[in-house]
Every structure is written in C-alpha cells, then in structure tokens.
Image (tube, rainbow, N blue to C red; front, top):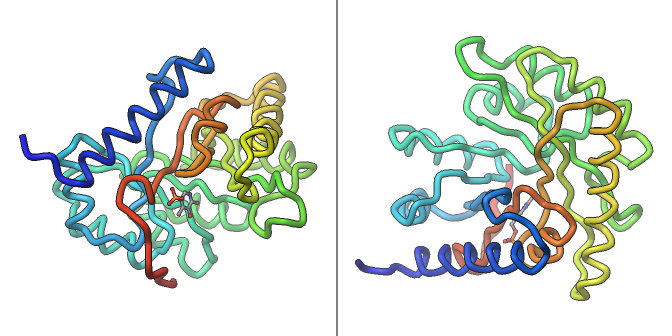
Length: 234
Ligand SMILES: *Cc1c(COP(=O)(O)O)cnc(C)c1O
C-alpha cells in the first residue's frame, strides 16, 4: 500500500486520539474525528477518503458547497463549522449534514425553514464562547440554557450538543480549563433533560486537552492536510 502524506498524517492523528483517550480513561470509539478540509482542494479530500475518513468540516459556504457537490457520489458527511450569515443559510440547509456554529436563534429558525423535507434533520451544535472577551464568536455562557431549549424545539433540526473554539493557549492546563467549562455546561444541560451526545472541541494543537475534558468530536485540519497558507473568504 502506498502511504500518501495525508494518509500518514491521518493515521498519526488517529494514534494521538487513541493515546489521549487511553491516558484519560476514555474509550477511543467515543471520539469522532472531523477532518477540516477548508482551503484544500477536493483532491486532498479524496486522499483522506481513500485512507478511510468520511466526515469533513468546511468554514466557507461557497467553497464547502463546491467540494460537497464535486464529491457527492462518495456519500461523505459534511459539517459546516464557520460563521454563518443569514443570507447563506439556504445553501447550507440544502447541502450540509451538520452545522456546529449556531449562535443565534434567527439563523437556526431559517435553517429549520429551509431544510428540505426529503433530507434527514440537520444536525446542529450550539457554539459557546468560553473565553469571554478574547473571543467574538459563540454565545456567552449565561445565554446557553435558554438558547439550547429553543434550538431543541425547532423542527427539521436536531440539537446534538455544544461546540467551542477557546482562545489559543500553549499551556495544557489553560487549554483544559476552557474545555472543562464547556463540558460542565454540557453536563448541566443533560441533567436538565436535553438529549445531547456531542461535545465538539479540540483542534490540531489542543486535541489532547479537549479529550481529557470530554470531547466527543475533535476538528482537525493542519495535522491532517498541512499548514494552510491561504485563507479564502465567503
Ligand atoms: C480551521 C478550524 C479547525 C481546524 O484547525 P486546525 O488548527 O487546522 O486543526 C477546527 N475548527 C474550526 C472551527 C476551524 O475554523
């Protein structure tokens, strides 16, 4: 078998997930890997698919839709993880399987209205700001309980859990602290009766800390596809 760089990288990331799970008493099977393919071409996604990866994350609506359409015959799972404006919700509702970045009721209501009835419900996560002033995206922690209840009641959407992108720290203890906050709110929502199973947190440089704090899905780009030199927009 020829190991491409992407397939070797993917194996290395899976090994990191397994090692972290063992170290922190988690079952590796309880932690899904979302491969973040933003800025990379469909050919890179194909390489990851050949190596066994099925779930991909995209930040930009137009780019994500093009890739998902190019690769439609492969039956992959597409996750939208970037900021979403209301004028772009329709295409997202039509093409993606998941949206991790829900931080306003209005956006979720549009997605609920626009999700085609022929498709499975759109799987969503509520994005939480666990870093206060240091982050602009996500809902403040105090607003999470109310918004979560509202999201859980919308038709055509299925609230699966919470997502966060904490301020970047090099220090494991600080990384873990932010993820721990998200885990605590997640547990609280479940105690209050919401059925949730997804804690989307951890990226290339902090996935171990996220796993130690209970992540069920890590979103990894750089460690799989390489360093991104260009960030596209829109
Ligand atoms: C880009 C991105 C990732 C992946 O980050 P890496 O550091 O490349 O692993 C994960 N989540 C979100 C929301 C992103 O925008």
